[in-house]
Image (cartoon, rainbow, N blue to C red):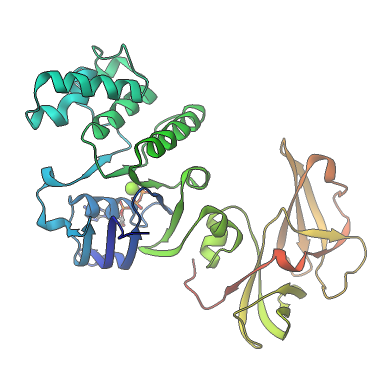
Length: 359
Ligand SMILES: Nc1ncnc2c1ncn2[C@@H]1O[C@H](COP(=O)(O)OP(=O)(O)OP(=O)(O)O)[C@@H](O)[C@H]1O
Ligand SMILES: [Mg+2]
């Protein structure tokens, strides 16, 4: 891997006394699809705006291609942005909207014509060049916005919830479309969404943000399978979280006392006596009608709900905590009122340090 194409070093941003981005370090690789994922207000748009040079960091350094963003004029930057609201010029045709970036650079007309044609093919809008934006659907308008950004040949494309205004079906189709364009053109995408499924399907890496801090930066599967913090475990997919203390460690097998009983798991990086959150996904939670060696998690089935592809079961533990179990359709033999014992395969639980940043 060469030098990062975008780099944030100890970046802070304050709006008045509101500390919105906190000591953030982030390196984005060339050609990467990196997603900033997090709840509303956690600072995603602020980061994009700072990378684009629309907003200054309060302190810290932001570099694009090794140069500090504030040292370049807007038109010199190899960065373009696509927003959720398409921000097209309503009085201009699709052709003029897409051509805009080259027109202001005074590129010769025949070259512009050639490039616009390429862009129309790329986003599959041939034949639409004479239309005005208000005569097009949301998905079509967003394609125009993307073409308008791509015509400048950016090295980095910043996309702020570009599919946020689209309905689910169109959104899924555009996800595939965008991913195709990104691979084809080998452009670095910095993509913002608060839709975790969208982030999981599209990204090479995801930065999960919480209140101005990146809590976990890793591939989608690592974020799902080994969430670093309790916040990440809860924000990405569903989780059962048992909090307790490591009682014994032997050959990477830990015996842990949690509020609901005793459990076991494969574990490293923890010591005896340490506080821990044990995270177990609903689809790997197992149950038995008879006690299981090494576990004492007993509860009563509260309800079983059929949701199409799976059964979702809630089990109320004797201390009142509800555990989720998800099973594919043919695999369910539970009913309300059953007494069951919960357990899991030792490698299926993830240990999270209890003192890390909490949601
Ligand atoms: N221009 C501004 N002036 C003052 N405060 C701002 C400004 N822009 C953003 N903020 C504040 O900074 C914080 C982060 O905002 P930001 O827009 O980056 O969040 P976000 O993660 O993009 O949220 P959303 O998912 O809702 O778009 C919020 O508390 C917001 O109110
Ligand atoms: Mg935003």
